Image (cartoon, rainbow, N blue to C red):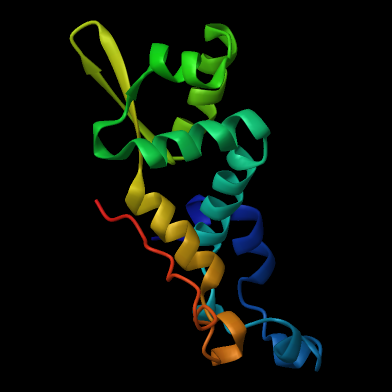
Length: 149
C-alpha cells in the first residue's frame, strides 16, 4: 500500500533523504523502513484509543466473552447498565476502530467482537516481545487462549 496517500506530509519529509548523510545518529535511532509500518501503527493507535475508556473497554470485553453469537444492543445496554444514547456512541467508536462488527438480524442489531482485529492488535503489541527471549507464562500459570474466527 502506498503510504503517501495516508501520510503525504511524512512522505514529502523523507522523500530523497539519505539519513546517514544528513545525521550520523539517525540510522541508529530510527528503525530501517521495512521494520515497521505506519499503517499498522496508525491502526493500533486508533484501536487502543477506542479501548481507552472504561465503558468501551467493558463493552468490548463483554462482546469478546459473548463469542460468535454476539449480543443485541438492548442486551448490551442492560448488562452494562448504559443508556442507549451513550451505548450508540461507544458502539460507533469501537466499530470505527474495526474492533467490532454489526449485523442486522430482523429488527435487532447484533454486535460481535472482531476477533481477527483483536488478535492482530495483540500480535502488533507483542511483536518482538522480550527481545526474543521466551515470554511464555510462568510454570503453573494457565496459558492464555486466543480466540479465532
